[in-house]
Length: 225
Image 1: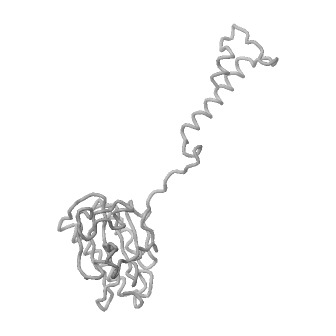
Image 2: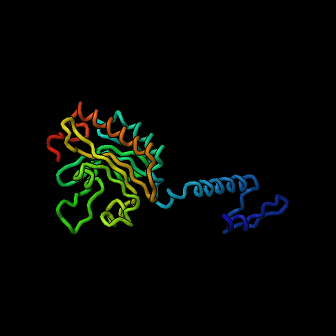
């Protein structure tokens, strides 16, 4: 575009020399061509990702099993009010923890059906946060896993940068632990009594759903341990 402008004078009182034997365009056509070229350049600047073969990242999206669809908005509200990267409901299986509901920015990492393998009896592996909650049937708070003797280097920390955790066990109608509800963040932080109460209230809502629908977490809970 610069060479064309240099070759052709925009001054209507001067004549433009022919290029390669072709008569130069008149001033009006030159202005039209210049405008079209400029428009194309502006369009390219506005959409660099497309020209580089990239697409814009998709926004995070709350998702749940069909049985937990009724609590989706509650998950979103808690993620916003607690200002955490992730709110999860997890299903416990014999060898893994499986995502049953996900909200918050980290839904790009935690999708419904995604599973993390439990450490189990393997002392060489670092346990999952939620695995420990299921095994102990108690609340777990990890302010910063990087400084925690048990959870330093766990996969949520190393893979996703989420080293802050607070989680509770979810029970079925007979009192058996069938999963967890938890929040994760990417900064060391504490949770107030009110914030902890919000997660306990969410746990109660989930347990009420599970008591009416044993498959709400995505699987027949009679097969889950």
